[in-house]
Image (cartoon, rainbow, N blue to C red; front, top):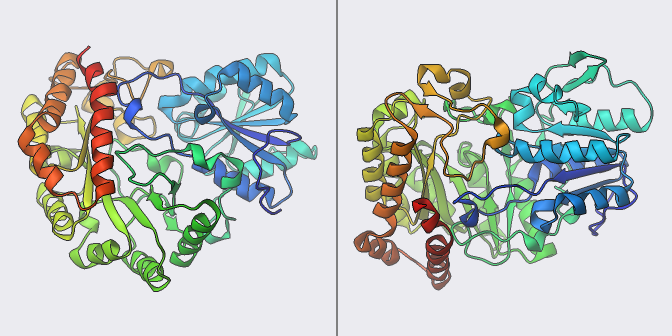
Length: 481
């Protein structure tokens, strides 16, 4: 089935919904709302088999639950799909209960990191008819086909459901090994123009988010990324290039935000992509996320020539001991070297740090603040550790500290609260050091001027000014409440 080129929620078999997030945390104001990428892939895959599918992103549309319920009624969809990370699980649960109460005959399916981490806990809620464990394309299609055509779904891999009071667990679902077989993501089912990246992420008004690989071979103990994708693989350089060309021609896109965990892990693939971009003289800039130990000067220079203007690094800590405890697999010297190469070549950086990691003390958190000041990235963010279900930290948290409250309905990724307290620390100390960190980076005139002198374009300067004002006006004050 070809792209519909029209966003609509009527006469559907399946409606995938991203609930409006009930969050008010201090960081939400400066983070971008990204497209529901898993939905775009699932929809693209399912509609090639003739399934009529729609996507409703209630967060970007600013629809409350009542408006969402109206659209569900209009859609006539027999199957409702929801997804949730643990920090958004409360939103999926809230909406699912309302759907089940108003439309008891509709089948509600939930996928995502939270159910893949704690499947039986989720299914026991009673409002979800089915859970998808792992990647969703194949198991969700098989389930939809079974439900719509009144066939058995009992033996579909990746499915969890209740049979009377017994929970049926069919393990992990089958995944698509050759990602190039997935049709182009179904961007036509969402209002692409509404997804505006914040100045902290993008310098162009017309940007689009893309994922080009799945899975991560690294094993940081705070991360749960391998809960969904057990096998690491990627779209080919040719396919990524074709998707970029399509985005430029269809939407006039000027910037690509590549949101892969470790974009440069396959060095040759990135070299091939850069060469395709340059050989075809594409007018495009792009940003990536990667690791310091996956960078070298030759590769960064090529990326810069092909349009890469900014790299996001998850630095995490300024303590080599803490980096070792969390199994980051990097050293401060490797990180320092990567930042120096970026600055030498004129590539901007973004850096993320986590306070309250296993092994953290007041001294190591001060080391983190000092290291952040040394690196002096164009954009630096500090978060308090969240022990995501599915991560090694969540499974073994008692070795490192405590989780004060296991009620995930209260968890909010953007909030000021702490959901993990390392041994020897308390929540007030974690909040105190986060405040110290932001004061150190964003009120120091010397550091600010150094960042300004590294700016390479008017658009970049304008973006940083907008981002700084946004942060100070909307978020900085909340840190001190």
